[in-house]
Length: 284
Image (cartoon, rainbow, N blue to C red; front, top):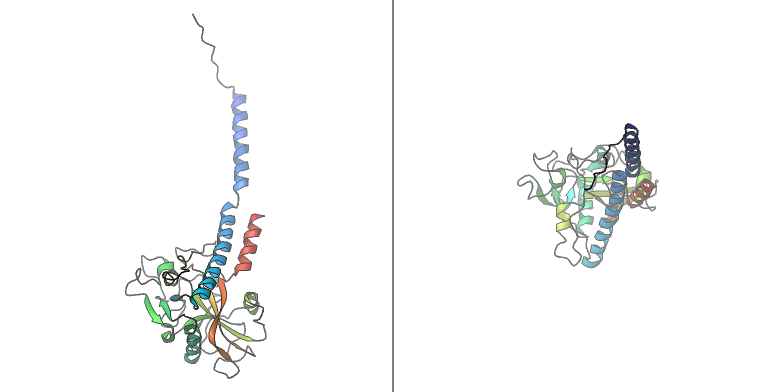
């Protein structure tokens, strides 16, 4: 006949030791994962900024033009979109002067940007901000227009350039623009048209050998895609001149025959270098 071993439970001291060890391990896990979300977002932003920029440049090489149907960041009345984040509105101003628009449109058309997706200034109910420009998502509201018929375009220019015709809002700090390209010196006028690389712009490349996937969404603590336009933004250099105080109708302003693609920025106005630096900083 076999005897069962005498069973006994944990003592109170043993239970306290186990609970203490579990608490220590939990704290260690929290420390290890602290900031993981921020690191992932920073890394994704750096990768997306670079990937979109490279894809557009590769498309230009193969197709001899840039993708078409970009998002116009002002509405049909030349007013900024209210659902753009404050950080985006800080760096963009509406350009509505007829002469300037005609010159900018001609420069964009010369490199393949012939049509724009134009949305309402305010959100269409039930449609996320990133799809406001998509005709399928906002039937009868979002429209496709010829760039030459646009009544306004978003642009970046230098701080203090208050006489630039057809402008409103606060112009962008010159040092920010100079970071995108060292040729944009602070004692000169440079006009950069800003267009959103959205849903339809990516789809316009579908039949190309270098078709670009649907543009990624940008997210951060300041940009919420549920309420803000969160596409990456392309900058096109369309004019330059000798003095920041000159209006675009002045003969000293030279409008390019062809727009020059400067690069991609995120909705907060950060370029590739800024995003890579942020990603590396988040990892350390």
